[in-house]
Image 1 (cartoon, rainbow, N blue to C red):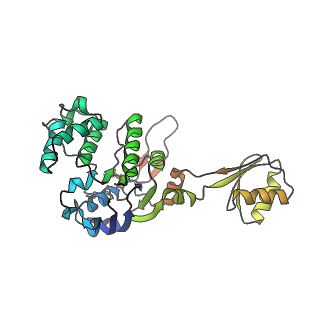
Image 2 (cartoon, rainbow, N blue to C red):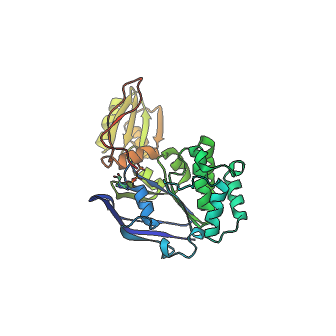
Image 3 (tube, rainbow, N blue to C red):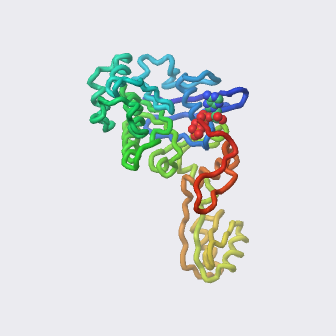
Length: 319
Ligand SMILES: Nc1ncnc2c1ncn2[C@@H]1O[C@H](COP(=O)(O)OP(=O)(O)OP(=O)(O)O)[C@@H](O)[C@H]1O
């Protein structure tokens, strides 16, 4: 059951740093979400981890680099952005070829096709597949060797809501067996449901790592909502106690910097009547946007006019 240890990973393209001195661990029995804005270096990091890109640093799987693993498909299954499918081979033959190259019995191919819901298209060519089906085939290839570690770059890309829910259950189940999952995604509500640990990067550098609850808890967007007919008085008293107070609507305050019990006690001591006292927990998206503020490589400068679509970006599309 592999601990992944990534140490001082680094990579530049044409002198421009894409990944900078990046170190983190992925523990068995967990789903570790890999988050970062577009162009933050997630795909590059995953390629470095698997020895597919040359760069600085090392990554080991239970102490062994990927390129030195004996029968690597049995240890690590990977789904990266570029999925090389043979143009004329069927889905089943594509997997059979991968299986035979790794000494995996052919019956395992049919097992994963079944597991991934691809049995009915097993004899079709992947180039005719929708994006979601292509993702499923890529996942089938990653699972072929029944590995104890999965490294997945945006696996939910192109999947429909049922597919997204299915992959969440698959990865949670995989981790519950004591295996390791390292997965990138921009679907933050999904990540909040799926991951227990996070690695967050911006401009190729580590921004945060650790349990997802700690990351969300550290957000300034966590607050206490108070409704009171004496909002002005309460705001003054709370500010006097060092809280940050924002009027969200007439008679309602959002208070940060004090916990819920203290806000209630302060109001009671000041003789202020409360009509509501409730916690407001930050979402993963809010915590992420706050943590990566200023770390976006591709920043939108113009909001679309109401009724139009699209936005203007300052740079090229990331990979
Ligand atoms: N093959 C390449 N040649 C040149 N530059 C590259 C190449 N691959 C990535 N980059 C650059 O490296 C940086 C990191 O890119 P990377 O694709 O790793 O980011 P990412 O976090 O996966 O982005 P996204 O979320 O948009 O997929 C970006 O500035 C990107 O333009």
